[in-house]
Length: 302
Image 1 (spheres, rainbow, N blue to C red):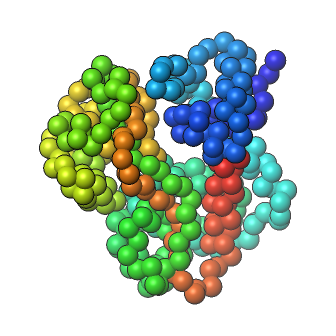
Image 2 (tube, rainbow, N blue to C red):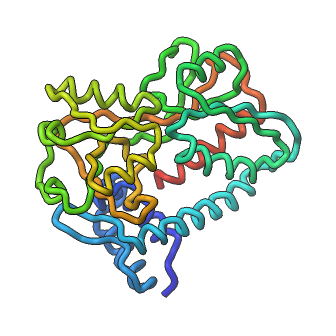
Image 3 (cartoon, rainbow, N blue to C red):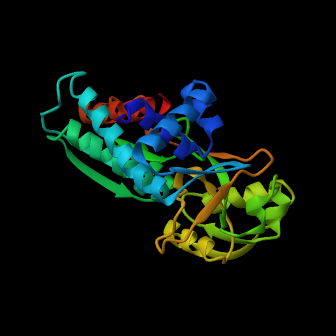
């Protein structure tokens, strides 16, 4: 029996959430429906997509490879549906986008690819910079819209923001680390570990505030602006990392496994969204861009 689009949607949801329970909640369906869909999908493919353990699920190497195919299939189907929802924008025009470093490779790439397919006649220009500078460009009218972390948006009086994705913080660990098998991981446990700190998009500031607020002073072993460096350092045992689930991938570039675990307590979340100048009349190209982004968000929530 061939797999279905619904099975792919459920699989991607579980892979992104790292939990059948959270995936079922986001999809507004029963856990049994998700579990059954995964079982049928694995049976059809003849491979295990997830490893089952007492704490839940972790994606396998085969699952990680299939995830790329599944997301492309769902994106293509979404584009096909969008093409019939209204007249394609064949007209010209320009779109000036800003993007922060953290979301450039994890949100914008897919969003921009879909937009180019939907609006091939628009000339797109994008700039990557820190959030504060992008806010300045938006207020000054030099950018039409920005895709950025909005958890720390400064000028909320002048800017309009719409959430695209909400990502909780989770703990990254190397395979074999004692905390991998712990039933509960607390902030106190993390404070005793060497921490690999990501220093882009206010992540370092957020992590430091989090640990300080909970009475723990972080032992920072390494600071880097590279997410791939964080992955490699964690995978080889140089330390642990506390980062938004948005950027988690289970393998380093060297092919080493990285585990991800929840941490007990009230952890912050990172909100990624679109931002534009409040009260401004967005050009058609920008309105179409916002529409494509909203369709992506809707597709993830199904």
